[in-house]
Image (cartoon, rainbow, N blue to C red; front, side):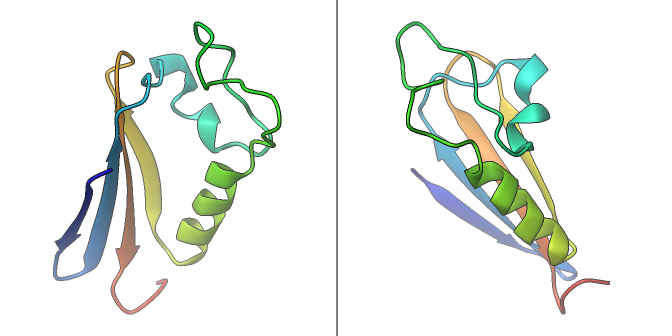
Length: 92
């Protein structure tokens, strides 16, 4: 998973790209909600049992607590790019 850091004057942006099945447009906002899990995806890893759906919600809470933003970019077909920004100097 390639990780990229962009360092600007007022914030830093971190992004991570994966090669998974992608995320459909209708799920791009709800994936950051606590306990949400994707529906099963053609027998793949999405919607698998034994997960709790708290990882991305925890990430969102931490990023926002520090004054940043978090989002996902995906064509819905293959792979995603998860991004977050953090302001330099902490929350405003």
